Image (cartoon, rainbow over all chains, first blue to last red):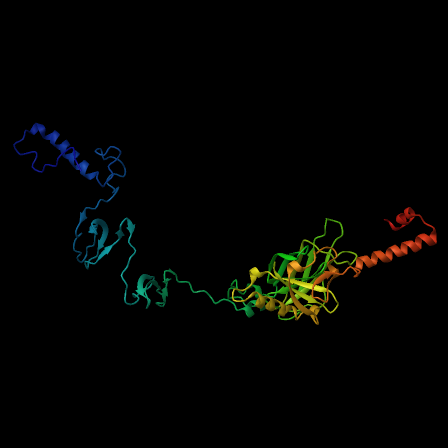
Length: 291
Length: 119
């Protein structure tokens, strides 16, 4: 960094003219002000140094050093120490233990493994890394009773969930602490176990469905048998259905359960107000019950 | 075309099961899949006593409003049996018979009869 005024400890000399004293004092102020302003605030006009915050640090410039120093009792050192060819922020405690704080432009959060959890006292907690037995993981030790909590596991946050409710527990619906997984959700007694939307015209087919197999049996006009994928426990399940007529308000259709329901299949009839079975392009069926 | 299961039911009617082979498990053959699907239908009272056969869907008659007339002939083919009277046909036949009786007994014109019956 270039300064306009050199710092000359030997100037003025004893033999210099006393008339140049005022000029020498101004030069000295300028030299001090320029060096002061590197890391300190000196007001809007640095050399006046008359602002309210004058003298406060505006930054800290650390000179890179191969070793910032040796910590000794009663002193700690913060400096810019060369690590892998570049200056990094390093702290040295009084036992001369270096703690590297930055690395490659980021905060350095790397810690060396500890063999066991560090001790913690009142109002203290400790976050540290330790080998879990398979690899290095992040841990926290609390103050109250020294419990150790593993925070990471195999590259992910270590979350211990309460167990999932079993299908039987979901079915009864009285369990309050466990969570319901998608695979057992349908077990609840109040959940629809099967539904279908069917085009019964031409070759009958499912427009969409859940828990019906891919087959559909055409028994005649407006008469279909549907095969259930996962059977009901008993044939005492509830069934509901609707069907769309050819046009709104004309020849309304109703859906009837034909014959006896089976645990793995159901027969439905679509009929008009004259009880004449008829095909419909939009038949809806919903089944609810135990399984 | 695709294989379909033909059920000749105890009431004489014909049921046809259409399969969605895209849902067939990979480890099953077509026949094994058909058997798996039909095993559930055999527990359905509608199919108790039915005789079973396999046909290609291309062998079925066109499906229309007279689907209920389908029957299985002695050669095992599904045909439309025109001798079968559908419920709506029976109802129409009876209605027309009554109209004739009414018209003759009361000396009504067709116009009078239609007005009376709301037709």
